[in-house]
Every structure is written in C-alpha cells, then in structure tokens.
Image 1 (cartoon, helix red, strand yellow):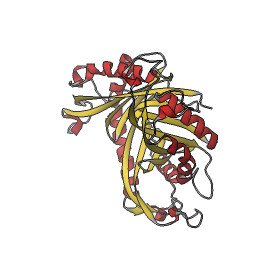
Image 2 (cartoon, rainbow, N blue to C red; image 1 turned 135 degrees about the horizontal axis):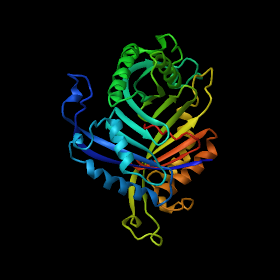
Image 3 (cartoon, rainbow, N blue to C red; image 1 turned 180 degrees about the vertical axis):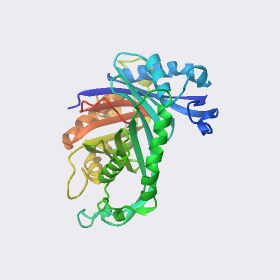
Image 4 (cartoon, helix red, strand yellow; image 1 turned 90 degrees about the vertical axis):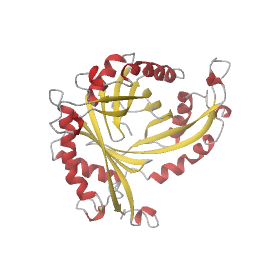
Length: 359
C-alpha cells in the first residue's frame, strides 16, 4: 500500500544572523539569534538508516552551529540556510531540506519542486457543527485555539523574495485573522458549517483572491488533530503519543540500543478522502481514535520487543507493524508517520507527492 518509505532526521543548532535585504527599519536587519531546527528527508527507510541519517546531519550542521550565519552566507534567510543544507548534506535519496527558525515559521527546499515557506497563525474562535448526528459533542457550541499553517511557493528573483513573501502573507492574513479571531465561525458567511476541512478551504479561497502562490492550508483544531486543503484535495490527521520500551535484537546488533530502553513515540495517521457534502468533513476524528484503540493499547506502556508481530525494536519495524494494522481497518489511510524523537523517524506514504509538510 505504501509506495514511499521515507527516513526523516532533525537536529538543532543555535546561531545568529541579520537579514540585510529587508527594508530599512525592519527588525530582522538587527543581529538576532534563533534555536534553528534542520531537517532532511530521504527516500530510503530500513531498520538501520535512521541512526545513520541522524548522525550524518548532526555532524554536518556543526559547521553552522554557534556562529554568525552572515559569515557563511551572504543572505542567511530560512530558504538560503535550507539551500546550504542541500549543498552540504547530499546523499543517495535525500530529496528535501528544511529549516525551522521559529515555532511558527520555516522554509523547505525540494530537489525538484522548488522552495516553500510556511507561516503559522493562531485564532481563538467558537463553532458548532450543525449537521452532525444528534448527541455528537461537536453539535454543541464550543471553541478552540485554532492553529492555521499556510505553505506558500517562493517565486520571484533575488534574495529579498522570502522577506517579501512573508510580508505579503502577513498582510493577506491580517484581514482574514481579524475576521476569524474572537468570533463565532458559524456567523461568518461561507462558514455556516465550520468543520476544519471547510475552514481550510475557506481560507485557501480568501488567500487565492490575494494572488498568492498558496500550496496548502492546514487547520489545527487541536494540537493533535487537524485538516488540510491543497486546492483540490482534502485530508485529515490524528496524532497519538505512546510510551513504550524497546530494544534491538542482541544477536543482530552490538550497540547500546540492544539494551532495554524507551521512547515517547509520536504517531500521526493521515487520511485522504472525499468530502462528505452534508457533514462537511472527510472523517470523524473520534472514529479514528476509537478504531485504532486496540492497537494503541497493545503498544502503549508495553515492551515492544515482546510483541511477536513486530520484527525488531527499531522505528522502521514498529512503523511497519502499525502501518499494516492501520491499513487493515482504515481503507482511506494515506500516510503513517512514526517519530522516536521530535523530527526523527520514518514516513510511509501511499501518494506520489514528494512534498511533506511539517506539522
């Protein structure tokens, strides 16, 4: 079912920079610092690859750790730092390079599709879903602190394009956010049935009117569930964490990972489906949680090395078992992500799309 097997590695570095191409008086022209995250994605996944990719990335970014990035790059924008990764972290199957400079901002460079920036905004809003079955909790008026992530294709010449793109996105978002924030979504024209899917589409259409090269809008209904729209297709994801003991088979590997150890794993299940025209969603998040519960109970607070169906205690083998189980109960499952540590894990994906948007 999954035709893409991806290994993902992420490592932090701490550096200063100034963005001289920004307009005069812009705060980014001052020397400032970030706790950056660097991410690389590779179209290769097996039980040994994750550790190798993590170690390689960690070694490579030492060149830009605790330094003034302007001494290395003429214009250390998020995109150009990602391009530095691209030039310095080449490897078989590595196809995407990402930089996250703040919790709410980053850039991704792809070998074939070009560069994206993303920005994440927040609104505090109420809603109710009028078409859900009687007794469903979402039929009651309630509220969320929604996160809204917007991915935009970088177009235009010169080193100033990222600064301009962020500014254009912020300007376009200002009127949208002002309308949505501290409001009841049901009272806004076009959002009479404000599911996360339809909210993502509504925002997409507003941004399209601003002539921005938007690739995807993601709505975080909570930190662990959300929906996205890319102009054609809808999808949702559900995130779960589980705390499990693991170890690699001692007869096959002579490392400290053959000892019993453990992780707080992060699992994300993605679903691509047609929008239900009445309910306004693709799937009910609660149904995902309930249907996956038997598998979750089998792995949460359990020694994974005692589960016979799991080949070994590495991330790839655990994800294989989860993917096989989830595929058997979710016909619309499109992707499985499993992380041992933040940003370090494997992705199994059934699409031909090589853009993997950070959550």
